[in-house]
Amino acid sequence: MIRIDCPVCGLRDETEFTYGADASVTRPAMEDTGMQHWVDYVFNRDNPRGWHREYWHHVQGCRQWLVLERNTLTHQIGTCHLARDADLAVKEAAK
Amino acid sequence: MTKYSAFSLVRHALSGNRNWTRAWRDPESKPAYDVVIVGGGGHGLATAYYLAKEHGITNVAVVEKGWLGGGNTGRNTTIVRSNYMMPGNTMFYERSMQLWEDLSQDLNYNVMISQRGQYNLCHSPGQMDAARRRGNVMRANGIDAELFDRAEVKRRLPYLDYSDKARFPIHGAIYQSRAGTARHDAVAWGFARGADRRGVDILQQREVTGYLWDGGRIAGVQTSQGEIRAKKVALCVAGHSGHLAQMAGLRLPIETHCLQAFVTEPYKPLVDTVISFGAAHFYLSQSDKGGLVLGGDLDMYNSYAQKGGLPIVEHTLASAKALMPCMSRLKLLRHWAGVMDMSMDGSPFITKTPVEGLYLNGGWNYGGFKATPASGWCFAYTIARDAPHKDNAEFTLERFNRGYQIDEKGVGPQPNAH
Image 1 (tube, chains in turn purple, blue):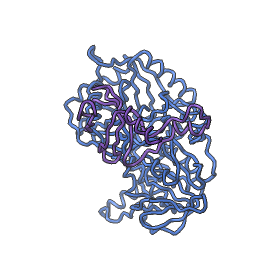
Image 2 (spheres, chains in turn green, yellow):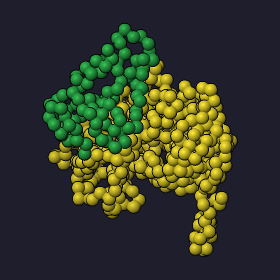
Image 3 (cartoon, chains in turn blue, purple):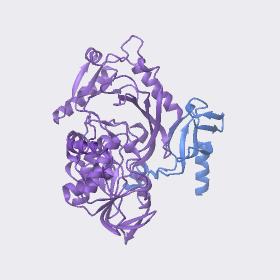
């Protein structure tokens, strides 16, 4: 059983959560007309063996979307943030 | 290499079965081959077999990091069927079904194909309509399919839950009588023996750690035991396709997910067919040893761990209980997991890649085992001729650029939903 340390609710079982998607993909700018950028965004994935950044939804708890790091080889959980904070941090870093 | 026959069985029995020769060699690697196949599972070995048999290309090596059939070939639930309805899939899987029917004779190796039939249960009028449509597509393509109503399913499968309390009432089923099961290890071993007899070198305990490059072209593989040069490198590593492709600088429309399977303690003959539950991802059959073989749903999150979580154990067994209440007191004997290439449309790849010299066979989702013979047959064709056969022509990477996904379930680019 994976246990996730939700920033709002604390340590909870994985059964309270729903896996969302790969959080490392970023949507191209809406004015970007490069076909390959959109194909990459919608379909192609890094699919790493090791640490993976991903969205989870605490659907049976606080109903917040989270971004967490999880190791795909061991299922060990790394950092866990609210998705809106994580998104903000990415934008800050990009500045 | 002796041919297996009733006569050879008797002869070896009389000498106490002490003089059987090994089924395939354990050769030293040559420095270079025409084709190096990465992955010694069913698909890789079948590819080697058909390269040699159909195309006369015998200067071939199969490189395997562990032992033959130790990955998903040894971890699946052994079901074979060809009930697909999307153009691109239908005739490919039917080719596979036809190859299965003759495979033991062709390989001179008993793969224990058992065409015991497969039921896909329907639990609503809508599912019955969808099943009717699927059945009609199959029959229009010359594939056998029958639609049964509730009474007929009850007559044939009396041990399912038909009570008023059933959480998902059974409305009927679509049935393919030629579907069934095969012995998964024997498939790997049979193809290995057949390929080896035709001169293919099978190199076990050699992990591919990188590629050799000649300009922008792949010219061989770097392994844990040295370099092997090759004119063509063919990946048959479903579960790890993303990892091996990444080493070549490719990103694939694939995520790797973990799928669990279970066997109960042996029981008297009860289930003489294959049954798929229509209300949740669950199916079962009974092995020749008596254990009920159960398959469940994905763990839903990306994983290379080859071990599953307990929530899916509970989910699978709850499904089993809902479908077949008489199973409730059987104990589980074994439980394991494999890692799947889950592609973005639920359909596979048998194709050349944008990297010159690299060929890809992967993206098999839950359904790689049934595809094994046709996968090898079509991949060998693609490698030998540098062009796809019509049966695998749609299994390209470019289909996503063109908007021609082959999405049987119609769920969109969400790998864990297929």
